[in-house]
Length: 114
Image 1 (cartoon, rainbow, N blue to C red):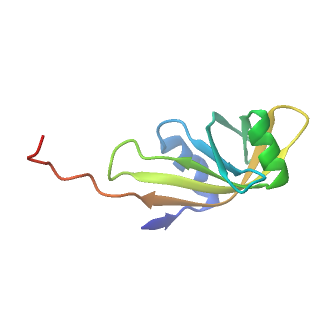
Image 2 (cartoon, rainbow, N blue to C red):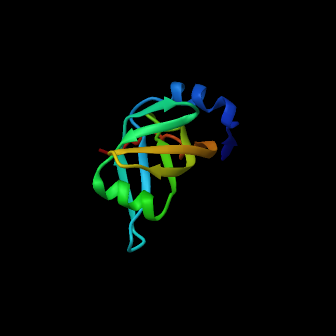
């Protein structure tokens, strides 16, 4: 189940998200590359300091995603699609294009087996 998040409400949803988000990019060979990032807001975009691989991936394929996983089973993940722009520094600028809250699998029922 996915619940759309209006972009004008995204900053509030990010503030509610717990834990570090993951930035997903795609390499030259088509494989996903996932790194934990610290994000900060800047004039309606998100900024993150990233390494060489992430920056190169975002330069070649600027459509990326950021995911805040749920802390506990049954909670919602926040998934943000964005367009990345890289510059001469190790920072990447992400312009959100869409966002959803996504319910993961329910918590496992208690088990009698050990």
